[in-house]
Amino acid sequence: MNTLILVIFVVLIHLGTGVKIHKLDVPEIIHFGHPVILDCDFTLETNDQELVVKWFFNKTLVYQWIPGTKKRPQVSGILKDRLNLEYVASRDANSVHRALHILKALPDLSGDYTCSVSTMQSEDIETKTMVVLVLAKSLKLQRIRGEDGVIEVQCIAEGVFPMPQMTLSSLKRNITGPEVTTRRKGQLYEVSAIVTLRALEDPEEFCCKLHISEANYTTRKEAIFYPSDHFQISVIIDEY
Ligand SMILES: *[C@@H]1O[C@H](CO)[C@@H](O)[C@H](O)[C@H]1NC(C)=O
Ligand SMILES: *[C@@H]1O[C@H](CO)[C@@H](O)[C@H](O)[C@H]1NC(C)=O
Ligand SMILES: *[C@@H]1O[C@H](CO)[C@@H](O)[C@H](O)[C@H]1NC(C)=O
Image (cartoon, rainbow, N blue to C red; front, side, top):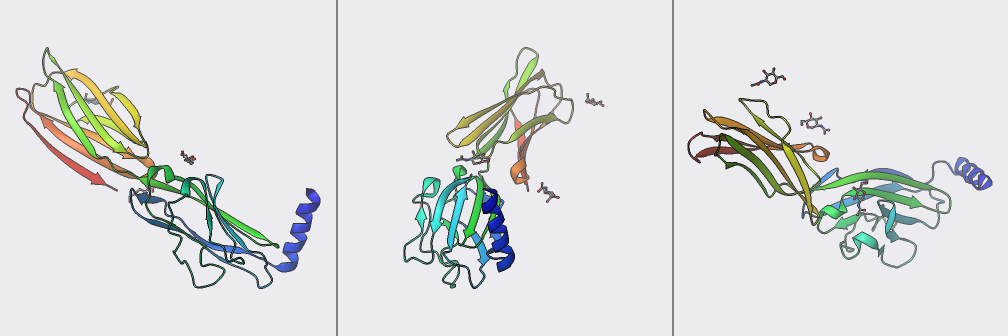
């Protein structure tokens, strides 16, 4: 093994830099359902032979293309039947099929993408992470009970990915320990926060905040609840 590493090392010194990935183009965030191109721009030395381009998802081989042969790229695992194989990344014969053209980004495609370009003489490898973002289908802030001197205020978000954090606050009082529940529904998350409070004496403004740290995304729902009836005014605010 050590001898092999030494041989590779010596070969590299003799041949200069060899294969080099210049740009691994993988967006950090892609919105649910959109197509996306993951590109791996590389160059070769003139004497590099037997080029192989590979992509790994979470360290598992999902794509392999050998430009020297006339064969189409081979797709396996999570990307099977999810790529446009007609996509041409470059006119350079060694780079035509270097990119992944994903037809539809779904949450299960969130993870680490590694491009590996290798020849007989050398190899270059690079990894980037992509998150498929699914914004909440709905964000509801509601008062669910108003009797016996207490109220319950609940916030619910449905259909989110990746897992969000939810906080509940009031302009009038400190809300401590809302009960936050996160459930997985298929590939998505449903989050709810609920707190029991002393009944309202005056109109009171509540705010529910949903934060997805991977995407640096926050959305808020604000609502004013009134003591007597079920009248309420609410507003929703998105922030990136
Ligand atoms: C891929 O890796 C990411 C980050 O480690 C992980 O959250 C995700 O569940 C993995 N996806 C699959 C399908 O294994
Ligand atoms: C909320 O808590 C902070 C710090 O713990 C305190 O300074 C503030 O007065 C409290 N506000 C209310 C409305 O109780
Ligand atoms: C999140 O967005 C804000 C505002 O655009 C920016 O200042 C901050 O650096 C971002 N943070 C991350 C972790 O991307």
